[in-house]
Length: 243
Ligand code: ADP
Ligand code: MG
Image (cartoon, rainbow, N blue to C red):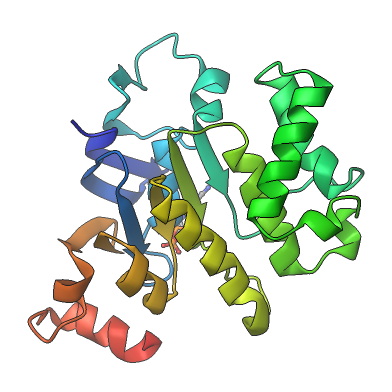
């Protein structure tokens, strides 16, 4: 059964229909790369998955629960869906370690000691042990993003949503972040990743979803998507630009 599924979701801002009926499902342990031209609706789609945006119509079902039903506990829901943004959104007044500890104490209600032990383990996993006591303004973009990933993973989410996590980074640190994400994927994390990194989509994703004009235009395994068998002119034009 799908862990997360959308049926015919639409989203309009005024009379501008940004999503035009998206059917999507992801199984536990799957990694889906979402790609497509700017303005096509990728971020809006991702934000509809965890209700940062409310779809105008359609259904979102997560772990058997209808998210658009009345009385859904949004805080509980979001604690089970990790989200990593282009901008890292770390707490600026806290060290890397405290950034990873705090939500565990606030949301998971772990003790300070437990939160610290887990945070140190996660910082090690993302290669940030030596920076644990450093404040965000002294970290590089790539380091901040790795802390942000550790902080999201610390909540034990069932799925991780990434919105262009490497787009704001200097080119030389992009691979550090992609390596951390590939590691998460191989640990079995379910992931939806909006990205322009075609190498990542090709190597790590189980499926590539192409969104353009508010619709899913293709949903294919990467070897098929990136092969010559893919003859859609829209997709080809996009790939010619990014590859
Ligand atoms: P992508 O992430 O693929 O670049 P977005 O989902 O950010 O695309 O945007 C899709 C379209 O929706 C764009 O035309 C954008 O201007 C519009 N849009 C996104 N968010 C809003 C908003 N809050 N209000 C009005 N229009 C929006
Ligand atoms: Mg976007």
